[in-house]
Image (cartoon, rainbow, N blue to C red; front, side, top):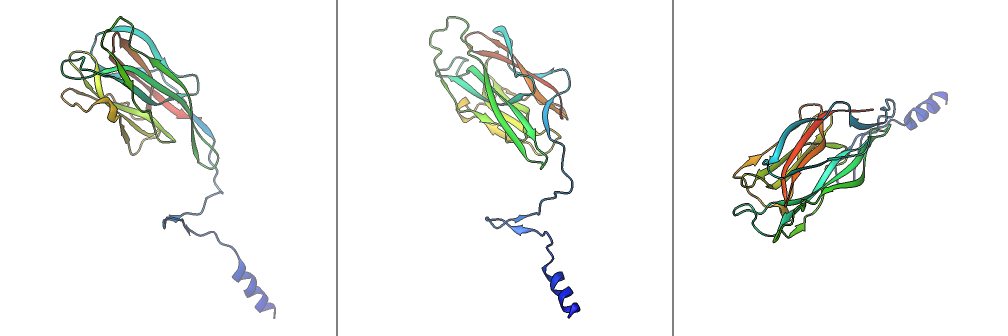
Length: 223
């Protein structure tokens, strides 16, 4: 009888195994034995220019920067409603979204969006430079800005934008194009951060529109 009871207990012993998710995929059992250290991604190095979008016109404006403990996580752009750079429209205003990117003890990432830092570009009296605001795009949760693509319009200004995002430790890059910023590729520009870096601030030269966007990257860590 004792042998039968032992076998019965053994048969009821729980062992965590993989289960099937609702969409048919396999969900691995959580590893609760090795919790990770909660942290927030932040800059640890001095921001350094890695490239620009646009040309050299306009007047220097205050840098677009985020509060302590936050990083740029996305943008929205205003495109001119008419051709202002030869036969091309150009970006008139830029709106940078800041946010806090954090990881908890279960290795789950969260992204909390916060303030928007903008430069409207209309620092001079500019006639006929109407514009519409495009949609905002943010990096996927847990990813940082590592690259930005654009197209120089004439000898200054820019259009045709896309941002690139990736995990702060490196890995696959997610490209998010802004379809409402035109689609020219005659003068492509592509500032990219180095390994272990993220975009932390942006210098701005503007007048009637956005003449130049200076991309600054810095080393980042999660702590």
